[in-house]
Image 1: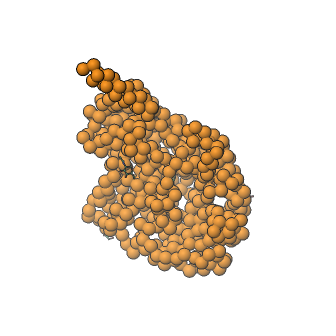
Image 2: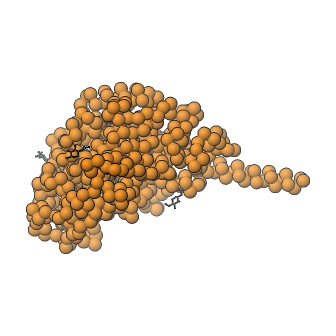
Amino acid sequence: MLGLCRLWAFIWFLLDWELLACGISPYYRNDPAADLRARLSREAQIFLPGSEGYENATQRWSRLATPAFAIVVAPRTERDIQETVRYAKEKDSTFLAIGGRHGVANALNNAQNAIGIWTRAMRTITVHEPLVNGTGTATVEPGVEAGELTSTLFAQGKVGASTACDCVGVMGAMLGGGHGFLQGRYGLTADNLVSARVVTADGGRVVTASASENADLFWALRGAGHNFGVVASVEYRVFDRTPATDAWAYEEYIFSHDQLERVYELANGMIGGPVELTHYGHFERRTSVDAEHCCLSGSFGKGRKSPSRYTEPLRALGLLLPPKAAVVDITQLNGVAGADFSSPFCGHGADITLAPVGLRRWNVTALRKAFDIYSALPLRLQGSAALLEGYATEAVQRVPEADTAVPDRFNNLLASPVMIAAPRDDERGEDGYESDVPDELYEYAERFRTALVEGSGGKLHAYVNYASGDEGLEAIYGYDQWRLEKLRRLKQTWDPKGRMDFYNPIL
Ligand SMILES: Cc1cc2nc3c(=O)[nH]c(=O)nc-3n(C[C@H](O)[C@H](O)[C@H](O)COP(=O)(O)OP(=O)(O)OC[C@H]3O[C@@H](n4cnc5c(N)ncnc54)[C@H](O)[C@@H]3O)c2cc1C
Ligand SMILES: *[C@@H]1O[C@H](CO)[C@@H](O)[C@H](O)[C@H]1NC(C)=O
Ligand SMILES: *[C@@H]1O[C@H](CO)[C@@H](O)[C@H](O)[C@H]1NC(C)=O
Ligand SMILES: *[C@@H]1O[C@H](CO)[C@@H](O)[C@H](O)[C@H]1NC(C)=O
């Protein structure tokens, strides 16, 4: 009997020690969140630090935007989300929705000891058949990733606006706008939001936001939507596939850096072109092509056939490698852009930051300055790239500016460095974190962006979904005074306690 008691004591000690080592506060020690578990559906899960689910939920694309979670809940129903938000409120705990984990906003770092609401288990896509005249809706749950949306719809004979990176969360992208290949025809992802079910930030209610219900919230969800409530599902516009949206002819070119001016003057000639005409340029270092210099690469995509009017002048500039040319379908297009599920854009854990700037046209003088900054990056940052995105804008610009919280539809182009610091083992501290890297990252990213802003002759417009938050609220949410006033008013209505202040918060 005595022996048994000792054994119990020993096991208890070990368990206790292990739990503490995993960073669970004593508060949770015995039955972590048992009271929450009791309020959730049977299928909902709760993941504790150290578990595989917790690891999956907390892996971030960029280590520089890393919220810290005490526990992670994987809801299965709208009600689960509401109960979790309510629970967080009762415990006076921070909570944060977790989608595709690609957010880079600095404010994400302010979420500490938070309850994570990982939406990944909610990823049903239901197309409402039949579509009428080629148009209808699908109900999309919040855990769907962009590539899944595209391929699921495609398999059912449908298409819809989405993003150009497979593993980005559809909801995170949509709430900030959502740029992608079909935007010229169908608008931003957010422009295709018909209605949303929203768990209010205090969990008190679940409301529908649409053109006819809670229209102000509906306005804000499209461009500033990470600030008001947790979206539990959306009705989103889908379209029958047509030959125009099915086949994408693309050509990929690699130019030497001294062609920059000529290439981007030609790219300016594509702005406002045919509805699917897209150009997507990179600055990148391809040592296999040119060991000394950086290269420009770019792909140009359009409907069924690449129009020679655009391709011939580019080919005539002289290419470093023979062009790649093919016809693919919409599900393969993110791969052409280098951002499919198997790409580094779908990896995690690097020190990466973006520094977005929206532009009307390429100013090749400014672009040259940015390129010079890029090509002189210190060794540690030489894995960096720059994205020079020129999606078609016809349908985006058809939406009146005042109709949504997206503030800069007049911009045709989206540019950003993707500033990456290579890990250097000898400099790692105990936690593997190098304290000197971020400053250098941000400094170069900012210099790059400043060159482009100066060349634009205007103010900085920073796409909310790429922005770090250092840009200032006007740069992110718009310079028209009424925009921030309206957003602040809505924040007072829907989240007066500022519970959802972890993604470029409206303060
Ligand atoms: C490699 C890469 C490629 C990208 N490509 C594109 C692109 O092609 N087009 C484009 O427009 N953008 C693109 N983005 C930007 C992308 O839209 C944002 O990073 C977006 O926030 C990612 O959402 P997420 O769910 O993946 O990230 P998360 O970090 O999981 O979420 C981002 C924010 O949204 C909130 N959120 C998530 N789900 C919900 C919900 N259900 N309700 C309320 N809030 C929620 C989170 O709490 C968080 O604050 C890209 C970003 C990266 C890093
Ligand atoms: C975690 O991710 C891995 C790899 O994607 C997957 O196989 C596994 O099922 C995930 N586990 C949980 C609990 O989500
Ligand atoms: C479908 O399109 C046809 C022709 O464009 C039009 O006459 C008809 O009203 C449309 N039907 C609906 C329900 O929108
Ligand atoms: C282009 O940018 C340069 C600065 O790099 C600026 O001097 C020039 O005025 C800009 N050109 C136009 C047309 O805006």
